[in-house]
Length: 181
Image (cartoon, rainbow, N blue to C red; front, side):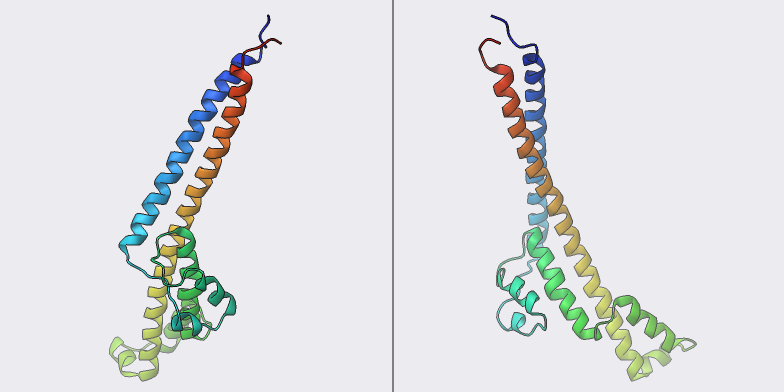
């Protein structure tokens, strides 16, 4: 009876892969839990009904319908809300202009004017309000996309950990099996 010379290596790899897999799965679960807890604190409810129907983009409407009325607590929901609701409203409000374009237009039109003169001019006041709206909306969108990014990192950990654990089991079957070579 001779055991395989690779059995000890397979045993070590099995244990290391199982430990690594468990650590990654735990990290992924922790990350998902933290993202969900932080998003839940904000008490955002996904839009539904008329709020979705008013959107110009049919693809955005379709994506949001899948989450209609749900509390926003996951990374995919955060991405859907950021890209298909917040972004769509920002583009509608600004006529398709980005924050930097709106800000640049305001700076160009108000160059050489005092803050009082800017506030007194209705056109510049409206542009100032749009700039603030764009800044606030883009900040919210960035935070939601950050939550989505961390959720995605947690998902990678979960799937990677599960794969490592499965590989560890496979090496364990080879390394710990009784038998002859």
